[in-house]
Amino acid sequence: MCRHLAYLGPEEPLGRLLVEPPHGLYRQSWAPRRQRYGTVNADGFGVGWYAPGDPAPARYRRSGPIWADLSFADLARVVRSGAVLAAVRDATLAGADAEAAAAPFAAGRWLFSHNGLIAGWPDAAAPLVSALPPVELLSLQARTDSAFVWALVLHRLRAGQPPQRALGEPVRELARAAPASRLNLLLSDGDTITATAWGDSLWYRAEPGRSTVVASEPYDDDPLWREVPDRTVLTASRAGVRLAPLEDPAAVPSKEPCR
Image (tube, rainbow, N blue to C red; front, side, top):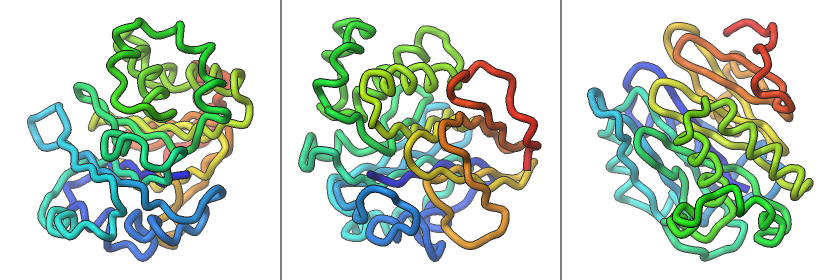
């Protein structure tokens, strides 16, 4: 169910991050190597990126497969950024809400993606509806499980919670309400990346002080790639990566050094 990627580092053309790698997000749209559920991610795609001096990211999203969009090929060749979040989509419910349902979702400086599904959607998520003010429910960007997860995360960010907690709390609550859910979340503000591994693959590649990539799966065979254990929250910057058990996202990071 979907593949996504976030990057922090020196400015690169979008194509160098998403299209050119031998197993990049572009190829993962039809031939992922480590996707555990589904094999084709053709129900939409999106990329968000940050420009110097502007905290609000730009986005390009479409409802069809990334390989069929010739305009994206041109855009990816010339647009450069040092902070990117992108996703290709395998819809829980095909056809729902067109490109409005395609990640990344955005609000202010934040970009967000969900790889997975809420099991038993929408019935299983009903107990969590009361956590959101009515106006936030009425403002959902799409009628999908991913848009609902984003609303839960954004509500916490707006309340001042740190990203690690804003992702970790909804994951635990949704996992209690719908235990078979897959909840790999990815969040960036252009300076940091926060992600959860819950039910599907997650990897990172870090060159401390230079760049960090967090992705559903490696886009090449570089030995720097490391797999994130399941039920983990990851926090990253250009300086490196920290991992902590997702059961307690406020815990002190693990002893694994920044790489």
